[in-house]
Structure formats: structure tokens, C-alpha cells
Length: 225
Image (cartoon, rainbow, N blue to C red):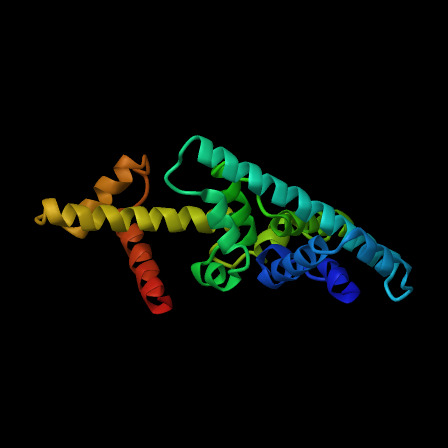
């Protein structure tokens, strides 16, 4: 167990590595089930290093606090008679990392989704976010937070913010293009692009150049799907 825990300081791509999440989840669920007597046996066994034991002890405390919050969450949702239990969904999805990988959700995205929905993120998610910041501080300026959270910048695309901005722009135009074709089929792609850009306040963007970029993006998206 010690070797796996130490591995959190070896890769700058921690937040994109769901295997780290799976490892932390295993540690927390293992530690949570340990009794005080079993913890004492582990501490005195001489087979586990002190930092590893402290990791297990902290994991038990962290998981215990989260499980308490889960119970309070269920109680609150029951009292206000909500149609769905968000905390139940979080519990079911906790170990389902394959589905999250396929959907393109990162651990950071999972963290933001929890917070935006008024939920406490599971311990393994918060542990990973904390590990990323710890890595950043220990790197002494040699690695950027952008690199740690999202990987290296892609040439010609830019950082994560730029990638998301372009993705949202292209998806927005795709929706408007398909919608306008239904109600105003006489419009050309160029006219729709011009209207879209004007609405976005991007009057200085050449619509023909924008359309070429959109076609490349659409082709790339179709090839990846």
C-alpha cells in the first residue's frame, strides 16, 4: 500500500488519472471498516511504516465524516421530499470510473459538478485535488497548475480554457445551424454563420474562415465518435 500512496507525487497528471481515484477509494473503504483494535494491531505490527499507518488512520476519519454527511444528506432530501436523491446517485457512481472515463469527465470536473449541485465531493476526489496542489507546491515552479490538472498545452489549440471555449463555440453554432435550417431553410451556411457571429459580438471574425474551422472541428468530432 505504501508504494501506491507514494506514487501520488510522481506524475503531474494526477487529476486526469482515474486509477489514482480508484486507489484512494479502496484505501478509504478498507480503512473505514477497520475497528479501533484492528488499527492498533496494524500500528504495532512493525510491517507498516508510520506514514502509511497515518494514511490509513486519516482515511478512516475522512471516510467516516463523509459517510456521516451522506446520512445527513439522505435525511435532508427526505425532509424536503425531493423527487430524486442526489447523494444516492453519488454513492452509486463512486466506483464507476469506467463510465466517467468514457464520458470524458475528469476528477476535477467531478469535483466541480458536486459543488455546483450542493453536494460534498467524495473523499477520493478531494484527496486527488489536494494531491495536485501538493505536487504543484513541491515542484517549485517547474510545473504549472495547467499541466498538473489538464496535461500539457496542445500546439495550435492552447490551454484547457481555450479548448473549452472553442468547443462551446462550435457546439453552439452547430445547434443554431441545425435549428435555423428547420425554420429558415433558405439561409446559406455563410448567412447563418454571419448571424451567429454577430449575435456573439464577434463581428470582426471572418465568417468564411469560421466556417472552415467549424467544418474541420465537425469532421474531427465525427471521426472520434
